[in-house]
Amino acid sequence: MTRQLYDLRHPLYPNPDLLKYYEDHKMTYTSSQGSYDAAYNNWYQLVRADHDISGSPIRPIYSEVSQIIRLKAGGKDKILYSENLYGQDHEFVQQPFFHTYGSYNKPGFRTLYNYETKVANTVPTGQLETIYFIDYSKQKIDDLYKASPDDMDIEFLVNVGSKQYGSRGFYTLEEFRDMELEDLARLGRDGKGMFKQVTAKVSTNEMAAELYNTKSTVNPQQEAKLYEEFQAYKKWKQSEPIIKSDKEIKK
Image (tube, rainbow, N blue to C red; front, top):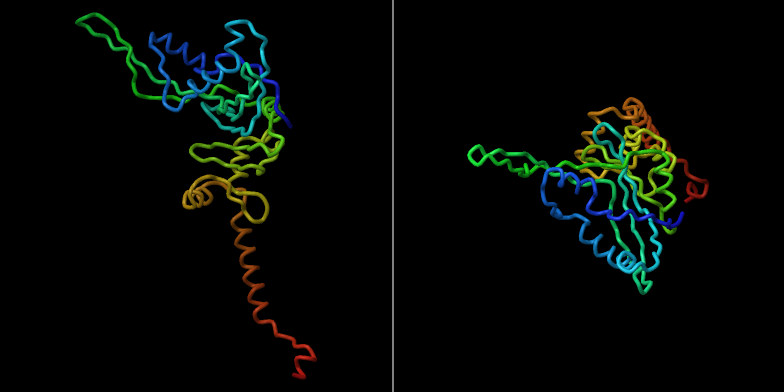
């Protein structure tokens, strides 16, 4: 795969739906810590602002997707993806912008009414809700995969609650695109092949608890039987008589 021509729909940040949410509550938007707002604005000034101001020709922007994440939010399958956007400044020097796209944090607001002044004020509640706005579809996975890097595999990951499964090269495109989210998580938890490859980024104790307290695709009875057969084989090998060659006997 290779970088794909990107149709920039400005502004990417802040998210337009988030800005409207603030506007509907008559609140002034301020960037939260860790947001892409400032980095995106600086990048945009380099690669597109001259077109907006003076009408200079639009220079192309390309996308390279390094990671796709599938997850479930509000009972629906959603997607996040990480990408580098490559634009050019007015001197045609390449300018990259990295981000993980597909979500934003929406603060909670509530209205307080002052009966003495008869004025209603909207104030933050201190709560944050993460909104995921890209719906999963097989076509979306295919479109993103087309922009995967030339020099390495794209990373497919699955988020289930606080756990993350997968690693670069673990899931195939067909598995990641076509399988149900629960099946992908089970595959990531149990691993592939006879020897399990644990891919979840959780502690050993947490992983063990999950393996033995939830349904698994590996049959414990089969594992116990294999272990017993292996132990019997070891015992037989240890008791097997050592046969010496004629040369060793003469010595």
